[in-house]
Length: 248
Image 1: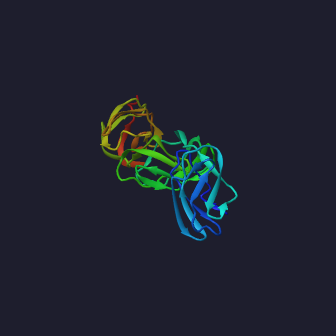
Image 2 (image 1 turned 30 degrees about the horizontal axis):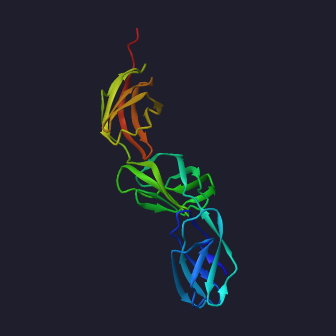
Image 3 (image 1 turned 30 degrees about the vertical axis):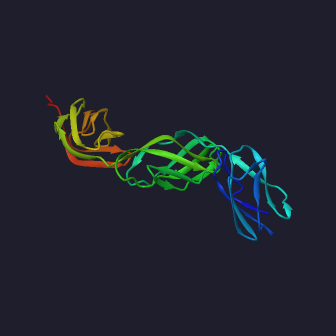
């Protein structure tokens, strides 16, 4: 007498299907010592029942006018607990793979990002990986995990849009570096790096439209300025010119 699924939440409420023979007239389905909260006699070979609350492993039995069946094990699973995301932000287009850590993840069937679900790959009871779906708009969304034990919320993931550079000011400075530069544009608040001619520059985020940057040393001539965040990069071609100092 197989049952499907053979596991469910400790809080109950899972609909299971019991398959067997001579099930007509089923009067009760028991989960250990507790009766199912609802029983439906589908056919002589099939009964559905809604599990009561419980814990651990219990035997499921079916009672008809002809007697009571042998018990079949049903496993109660606790709700998952999520402790961390391997990455808390990524591109609005999605497609990046992140790791989620916690406990009770071995039966995970879906991970939701702001209501958009993705199917995870379960690595262990403590870890799963999932490909992030595309987001509707840049900004934070709630992350929830659904397992046989239920759904748990509490983590946040931030969708980030690609940065765009509007202006670089001033547009020139000495080859020794050290020039304070203001970069304006959009989606700059999640900036990971700024480079001048490929050389990394120290920077600080002022707000979503402004970066404060100090130029690194560079060779004389015009160089590209590149701003990068988790969603991608934007290049302002030849936006800054290194000027050599006078020689005597």
